[in-house]
Length: 174
Image 1 (tube, rainbow, N blue to C red):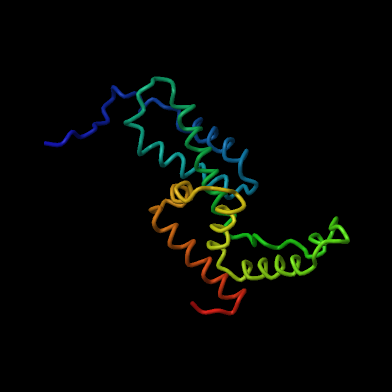
Image 2: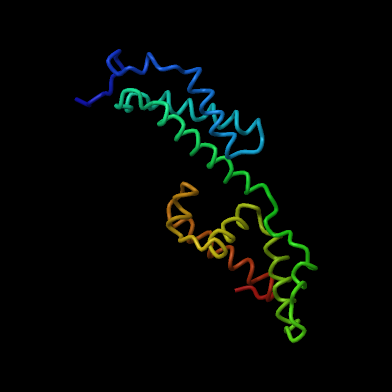
């Protein structure tokens, strides 16, 4: 027989001030997200998670902190998803030239520009994965946890992305 978690009146969740928790969630989400719509969505998602997990909340009176923490995590999750939609490599070439010493090898600069163009042609998810891995210096395990996929999937995706970049930059087809 399985142990089934029951939600009886002894848990205290039925006496929670859900309207107050909603306002608290919304404040917390607004701190992270600039869009009011996104903050509303994150707050709703947080309340839904709190409702589903209410039986596991043991500390009486600790629900406010617990639900705000869920709201902050939801807002951060939503903010990270928003970066997928943004063009990650839109730096102006003039900015790349600023502050370069006169002795700088321009062929190196041309390679950087070619690489940025090749990355800009990637799908936004692939570009973000590449940016987080190499510019953000995140491990493949950390990327997997953030994306919610197995580590092997991240390794394969990175391998394929590097292959596509190599193909675009060198014209070789391995």
